[in-house]
Image (tube, rainbow, N blue to C red):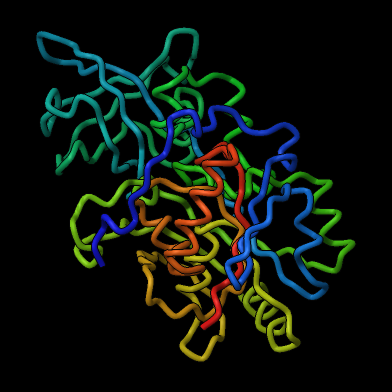
Length: 358
């Protein structure tokens, strides 16, 4: 399909720079299977679900993947900003850097911020390889848990550019950009639908007879990038690591066999569930990478309802929700949301999407 079919105009004033407080007071646009739109709030979620439904959340934890430093060892020492996007092993990460033209293989970058102490006061990394569009491989001087601690000490939450370009990230973001389910470190972007949840909302869902399950998908930066090719078939997704336990898979399969619906909290949960599901609809345990790319025409095997945020034009995520609820329906829903003042993107409001009828 043509990428421009997934384009739309979004006013800059629609982009949320802070989350709602409390989190479950965010607005929620309900898109029903027949395309009818309802304006509600996240706190109303239990009213739209049924006893026996199974809610699936992503328990990945965002690391402090934004690092600032300088190139050392040459006559000049230009400032370098790096965003870690994928762990390769105990000491190596793939990263996006700015300005990439200032670095070459063999260069050393020293990361460190004034006022923060990390072991010896800094963290060095050698540029091992350089790819396209600012992507490099960094080999750090620390390994394993020592490196993880150094990154945590020196780094900052990697806020999306549509937020970071409009205000300076601060200490509030360290908490705001983490879901209440965050447990397993490894994501470089938040599974943002999960940001809407509170202990009170979880308790209300359980009282209503809705069970909650966890999986892990370490969200990569590539998930949120706009698609730059003219045809969707030419786009290649970055692979992300995910895991679904045998117990979770068995519980979800049993619930579906009893008539319960699978409710994915976030496109990350949906993509991992669909990656782990066989053609006959059986959810299998999963431990590995997925690069699934869902566009209209995809036949969903696992997920019946999707709770998600409002996404970027031309993004793989807007393509996914268009596959789930229909392109025309989602364009109408987004136009409605813009007109009604809904807040977009990571810190914005939510949609509750019911899968389009076949």
